[in-house]
Structures are given as structure tokens and as C-alpha cells.
Image (cartoon, rainbow, N blue to C red; front, side, top):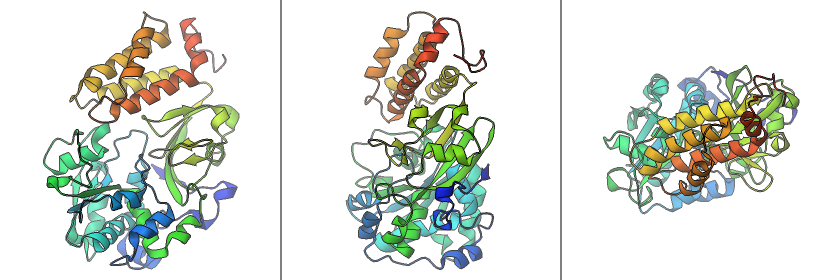
Length: 404
């Protein structure tokens, strides 16, 4: 995984590079020289986060200040989540490799401001375990933070799965009638934030809301990390300002928009975006005239590639990632994947089954895995509708060299 700070004209300013300031030099001394010590207690932190407009960067894009304000009491545990089970995402791993101290700062700022006695936990993908443990060991206050390897699997980063693993379980999503800010780890109020969210929080605590908003747009302030891949380019992570467009990302990769058939935005639970959507801003959550970037994945599909084949592969993977706890996941997702193959390949009569799965699966799972899978499948059927028709006639874009 390589790192490419954004190089498009509108994002070339150094003010757009915040989280990755210490690229290649993640040590404690470099961190202190770049950012100074972390505030032991940030006065008015909740108001500051509300004014900054910081939202979660793990995919849900929930306002950070609202999550903190919803606590039923002082949090007994604060968890930094870097499970990163999404196959196309490496932003959290890159952040921990290059700026881990900002993440740890975020944990300590929250503890100092909300609950000095809270347990501080860093839950990381096993591939990031060494980097995380080194960063904690370097800090004079690192003894307060416990690093734990995440469970394996696509759904391992779901917040209830994180709490389940840290409670001694298998790291599976759980049906939780109470929000974790009410009853989480060991039944106590718990905060779980993505590591990128915590790194932003640490900077806001230092420099304030106005500084955070000095980059990005009023509706999507600050910067975000995105993982870019596809079309033969080396997968890499970029830090870009809020409001960046897919057109800007494509240009920064040195590609012509005309060579890109579609872009998968948000990862395996995301959506395909066709060329008409490339000029729309990438925002934390989709709104009118924007594209929600979710967990920060931008995967490019070339004109010569078959979108149906790519989508089928992803759906088969998602079906295999069931936590085996509820019918919609255990039985519904394999049925959805099989019906998708039948419809798009012109085999059998899977159309009725596919439509039934698309309409009945959402909202019925123990977690949101079925919802995200349905969203992805529906987007593939819409964006690649012409390719579906071609497949039924025995033709394929890939076999025809990209021609319809």
C-alpha cells in the first residue's frame, strides 16, 4: 500500500494534508514536533465538535458530538476501531502506520474531557498490530491504552461485533436493543469511534472548529482519507478535502474520465457510480447532488472490464461473510447472490427470486450486513443494466474489448 497526498490543483494546498503530515516518520518525537502535546482536557469539547461538523469516518457518518451527548453517563470504555474488514480499504492501516499518535491523542482527549478513569482500547486489524503496539509503547502515557487484535471477517468492525470481541466473544455482530452509549462493554456506557475520526478529533481539540472548517465545504468540512484502487493503478491512500469530486480523484490518478466505466464508492457495501455522477462531490453521507463516500473506498472500473462479473464476485464474497446468526444473512444472501448470477447470466428464472430478496432482506438482519449487500446489488443492476441485457444475449463487454 502506498500513500499519495492529493495532487489535483484544487487540493494541492498544504492545508489539505493534515492527518498524513508525518508520512514516513510516525515516531513520538516527530509527532510532538509536528503537533505539540495533546491537551489533557479540552474545555467545551462537545460544543467544539458540533461547531466543527465532525462526523464518523468509519462509514455511518453520524455526528460525533451527538454520539457523545447521547451517553447515559460517563463512558466506562472508549474504543478506537481499526478492524477494517472491508477488502478494498486500507486507510486505517495507513493512518496507523504513519500517524498513530494522533489516534492515541484522540483517545486521551476524550478520556480527559469525559471520563479520566475510562478503559482505553485500540482494536486493530492484525496486520496493524505491530505498528499500534510500537506507538503505544513510545508514549509516556501509553500504559493507559490496551491494544487488541481484531477478529477476522468483513463484519468484524461493526460496533456490536467490536464490543462482543472485547467482551471475550467471537467478534460477531449482536442484536442490541440499547445503543452502546447506554449499554456497551460489560453493560456500561461505551464510545466506539473509527481511528480516523479520533485523529481528526485530536486536531480539533488543538486547533479548534474554525481551523477544521478552513478546508472542505460548509456541508462537508475538513479532510478525509480515501483508498483508491482499480484499473491497474497501485492501490493507495489519499487525503482529500471535503467536497472533492470523483472527477478530481480520477484526474489525480492520471486517468482520463472517458477510460472509466464506473466507480465503486464506499466499498462492498457501497454503490456503483456511472460517469454522469463523477462531477458530484464526495461527501460523508449521500445527499441531493452528492455521493456518499462511506468508509472512504474509491474503486475504478475500466471500460474494458465487465461490471456484472465484478459485482457477482463481490456478492459471492458478501454471501460468504455471514455471521450465521440470522436467516437473512445465512440463507438470504446466498440466495440473493445466486439469483443475481442467474439473472445477469441469462440462466434460469431468477428474476422473481432476485426482486423478492431485494425487497425483503433490508431491515431484517441482526446487523446491517444484509442492508449493505442489497444496496450494492441494486446499484449494480441499475448502473450495468445494458450489460445485463448484453449478457442475456450471450455478449460481454470484457470479451468485446469494452465495446457494447
